[in-house]
Amino acid sequence: MSKKATAAQLAKQPTTVRPFAADFFERVNSIFEEISRRAYEIFEKNSRIVGRDLDNWFQAERELLHPVHVQIRESSEALKVKAEVPGFDEKELSISVEPLRLAITGKREAEEEESKGRTIYSETCANEIMRVVELPAEVDPEKVTATLKNGILELSLPKAKAKNVKVETRAA
Image (cartoon, rainbow, N blue to C red; front, side):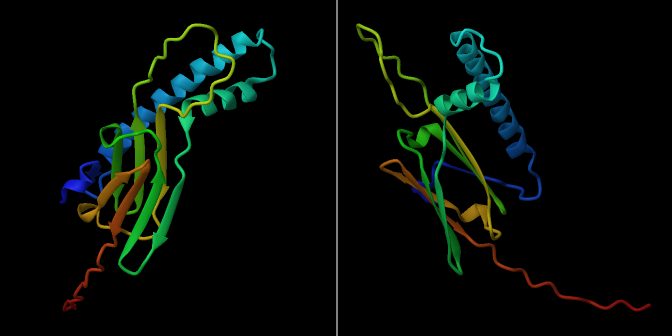
């Protein structure tokens, strides 16, 4: 595999999803707990007003998770994926590829900013991203390449070649 594919983790056994699933569910659980804590903080901050649970949850999600916008193009040979991952470098991203699934996750350390005075308004991207995409065609995980430039992750996922199976007849 080429040097530009260092951010990709390939599924070695396409039929077994345990390594992917275990890590994925661990990550989802961790994110769920963080969102729950933040939603409760918002609830506390808003004088414990009952009936705004969903609003608090959605606000916490917006603060903690950045949506990964994805574009997928298909040709006869490959799928080309472009994903927006602003502010993340290749060491902070993890890409898992299975024949029919792509997962992009990223986590970076929060930068603490010391300043005098209080913050009136702040709009920043989240420090964690996650996106799982079911692919429209089977790909070969061993041949995936990934490049990251200016906050855009580009993946080339060559399609899996169809295997010819010889049919034999058995004597009854």
